[in-house]
Image (cartoon, rainbow over all chains, first blue to last red; front, top):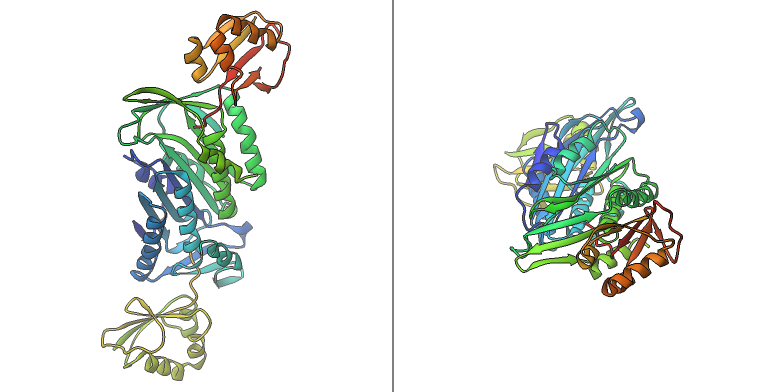
Length: 146
Length: 146
Length: 79
Length: 79
């Protein structure tokens, strides 16, 4: 499931739902990305998506992960709009038979979401707003997956 | 925090608690290990710990992870006693500034917990009970961390 | 009439986010935009910029239908 | 009197999980256990078996105090 939401969310509630009623899943990995306050230098974050296109592009990568790691299930939820420091921005959960697959798929999906997914990010701080583009580290992380 | 519990638990409730009120944590990784039914071949699992010793041995590895990946926080909860198929057995959460540290520390802690932590595991199935010792894969996973 | 959508910093640069424009091809649309605002036109050819027509990334020129949706996408920054 | 604890398959093998035993050293304790039940005594020297005295893993012989807690630990299987 791939969802974009403007509302704050609780990653724990998503994990509760995701982990229910599984008898053959041995492993669930999750990742939650939170907006850092950066000691006050970032007052808030604004994320823009292209509704329809963004979900469908994420869906292609999700299908690739599902196949590559034989996932039993996955869930991706991403905030859009204005996000306050400390708020969750993104949640990814992966379910698999064994832990290596669950971890790697979750890690892979996050690398994609952080660097290549169709989002545009604006940071609002005390010195005004600026658009953020991917860091060299984001590109390097992505290279790990060939 | 390191906890052993005989009672079933909800990993989502633990993540809700763990993710609250963080303004400088950018990344939370979690892992939940569930008891697999193995298509009916395992009816239930029994885990034995050595109370006091088990928590203190896990604590040593947790301190190592905290230092090695500069974790902001971590939480480890492990079931003991009889565990039904589909029930969570273990939950690990790690909080860090950035996602690579959170993922790696969580992965490292799970490798330890699955192969070296002071637990003794008995599987109860249709053909009786047997004690399980670490697999070659468990030992190989552990070798990755030097 | 194609529906033209801008995202990210292109919105700030052009001062609008959505417009209807007359154009037979993507090339014609780019030419019209560049004539109107040369700085913005130049930004649309910058590194990492992509164009989606009807929510599919396109390279080179393509014909536009009367209901085409054209989106100009600055480098995606992820979430 | 040392308190002797067994874990995992050692409990099934010996048929008990906790006992008080008289022994001045770990060596003496092993000897007494082996005399009583040679199969169990042999299992205690198997690969990967560890012994904790007062919750600390010990190698070789160590003296036991009157309140020592001695735990025989089969290879740990993790969770």
